[in-house]
Amino acid sequence: MTVPVPPDSSPRPAEEPAAADPWAPPGQGQDAAPTVPGPGPGFGPAPAHAPAAGPGQIPGQAPGQAPGAPYWPPYAMPAPAPQPRNGLGIAAMVLGIVGVVLGLTIILFWLSWLPALLAVVFGVIALGHVRKGLAANRAMALAGVVLGVTGLLVSVGTGVFVVNRVQEVHREQKAQAEAARIRFETATKAAEERAAKEKARIEAERQRLAAEQEKRAADERARRLSFGQSYTYPDGLKVTMAAPEPYVPRGGVGETPKDATIVQVRITVVNTGPAEVSLLGSGLPTVRDAKGNLVFTLIDGSGRMKILTKSLAPGEEATGLTAYALPAGAGDPFSVRFDHTMGTEYKDVIWTGPAG
Image 1 (cartoon, rainbow, N blue to C red):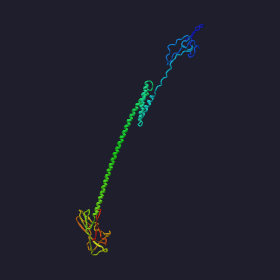
Image 2: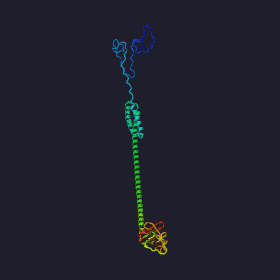
Image 3: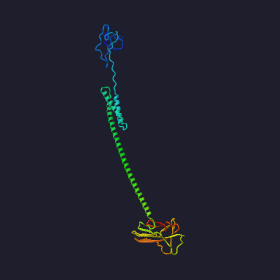
Image 4: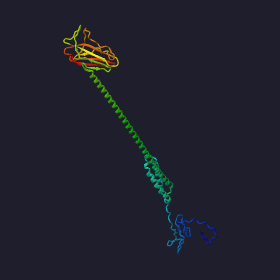
């Protein structure tokens, strides 16, 4: 804008006008109407031209506006910029990390599928928001999807591993239990067999002892004879005692009991075995009366007494004669015992009966 030169002054160079204050009222240092500023950036479009001034109006003044008031054209307010929606992408990445970490643990792997699945869902939604321009963290959303899928795969893999391991442990325990059962059954069967063998051995031993006892008892009964009977020892020596006969002493005789019964004892032995038999210790028999008292041999001077020899050859026979005075009333019955030793084995034969 230029300032008009007064007529009474000489022309002068034009001076730069002072900066106009758009908010100052007209007439304060300004003769002309202020210029209308154009729309700024981001504002609505300015009108094509200012409305035409009516009668009595200053150009640029709106119709009906008071004279002297500047006219400002209407403009649009700037719209606020939308905030990016990045929460789902962040949540997807965090849940994906949690799913992968939980999937790697043996104890908590079964919980990892939920955060991993949520990470995939949230990541896919966040990627959709990125494509629509509503979010700006595509990398986080994509990482959440990848981590979620990885967490699901790790969870499935860990689950398969755990299931296989549990089944393997179960099979091992089952095999161990089966082996223990077989060992127990084998040990039980072996113990039963040992018990049966031991029982059979004990029974056989019992039967053997019973048989030996019965044999000894039978042999004992066989060696308890009446006068006139015989017994044969295992070595082949056969011994027989004849029935006692009254004996009358002759020659010099020692003192005899009053009213005693004097009897003669005759014992005959025969070697029926293949080897020589010793009669050492068998020369004189042992006699006891009815009360069990020992009766000594009666010796006279007649020479009729005979003592058995020390041994017998196979087939050889010998007879021993002795006399005994039985006290009155103690001779019925009385007993005669013949002793014979076979190496370390000793056996006697006892005859019992009346004196007359």
